[in-house]
Length: 137
Image 1 (tube, rainbow, N blue to C red):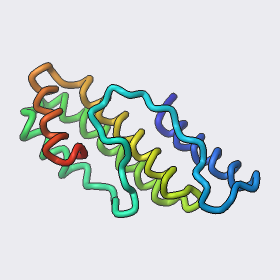
Image 2 (cartoon, rainbow, N blue to C red; image 1 turned 90 degrees about the horizontal axis):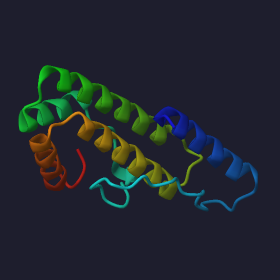
Image 3 (cartoon, rainbow, N blue to C red; image 1 turned 120 degrees about the vertical axis):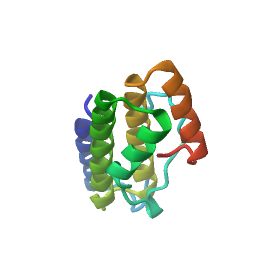
């Protein structure tokens, strides 16, 4: 399932959850976790604003010594991730807990996608960068 589809589905579920008369502040059903990523259990969106994808790309390009084609791929993943986080921040009908769960999924998915573009030595460095940066780019 594509990320945009997943976010649309999550928003639709949240709206349906609210229409069905769920108590205010009740958490909507949680998304499915794909696992396998070194990310924390949840990202707190309350203090989160989308980071500048270009700044993140420069950081990764320097630390991982990305080739041109890798920079292009990673850049598009980071742009998409920032767009999805902005969408999550704009959906007021979601509880903070559910937004955090969705943000975690978006971050995990983007990290997995980035990993697929990396060579083994770059993957090890990427995992170190994630750990050093608080497990978040």
